[in-house]
Length: 72
Image (cartoon, rainbow, N blue to C red; front, side, top):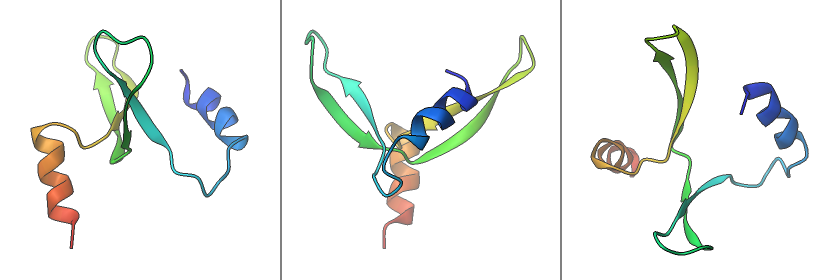
């Protein structure tokens, strides 16, 4: 998905609603875990030298550490 496509879709959303990322459960056709977005960060593809963006949910060792540092 291109950034412009995402922006167009977001224009139709409630601006005060929270966006979450769905992580499907293994071996299940529907359902999963919804996680909040921690940050969106640039990622450069070294083969094509193009910038892409990664949605980080804070899941994983590094993400959990960052999230724990921001909690009061």
